[in-house]
Length: 501
Image (tube, rainbow, N blue to C red; front, side, top):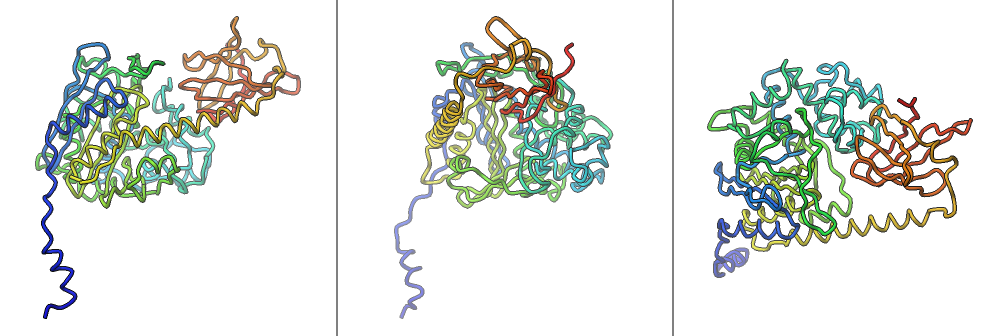
């Protein structure tokens, strides 16, 4: 007699076998890229996929510049943005092996001038805290993005920013604190950051096309041109105000071919061409979760098959249908990048594109991921992301209408227009100049000149790439003179009136 407990097993064995899914062919991957580029629309993209220590797909699609013939190739340079942060942590892992630093060294042991607004945090913040974004500082991106000062001065300006959260209690992405980690690593190695990355990462991996700043990338003829969508929804090239100096937080430019070597290095736990460049233990630390990322409903909607998201050291760690993923995105001046690693499958994907404000890279990455994992049931990731972005746009429009509803009609500023003209300073964000023209007041910040439109009383509105969608509320002193303003948007800071110069 057959034991009853074996009946289910025998029944399964009796079922007809389902044929295993076939791995995607190159033309199927080509079709997926083309479909995603058309959906957004992206002028040019480059994709590399590695599996089992081999490059299984490497191709450029579209053009470097809309309206011109120059085709994107596997060697075309794109800005990696924040995907370049992992170069810094990989180099730091090598320095850990060398005994030149530890992840838990105090930052001030390597950067004595490093200071935050909280003295207790300043004394205790560690290198690990910087590279997993848990210092308590909010993003404050304008201290980094398009800033006219040096990386070193940008780090010094952190002292004038209040902590938004208690130390080590929340993930808050901050590129300037990450920049500080790169500068600390360079000092520990008694060299510059670019020399550290070039000698320890790029040369051993054979990444000959990779550039460490925009100036170097600009000299290369095979470089993707940044684009943004015009009012008609068509991609339009523009001249970026890019980072001209090497920056640990995001100045790396690379190609799909070079990134193939970078993916293989991580999937082989620190080896390249059979040679170990960093111990598996030290590199694995950069892949290990350090702090949970709390997601908003809109963010969670982008990852419907994910239950938990954490941040490691320049890598996001998340699950996808039972698979552990290491991922990171990057965005800088009209270009986007997305990298995904699946360590257990020895699978890596990198997608580069030359369009601003697009979800194509992330949508395409997950499309390719499901194809490479041979999942029988696949999502339409392009449609999913479009739906989420439409919801975000609707939420933003609702907030705009609610703000307009708060407006007090038939009010006017306390003073005449000339009284608001002048220079206003913040020790972290720099200087804003308010000018007067025939058409009204103008907001001038880092060369971005925008109309300052009256909202009500002494509140004005300014909208632009750097300002965001900011309310600017002017203050008067006890003599009735304009003494400063508080700006929302990307600032959330108070500027003081400066002596005109």
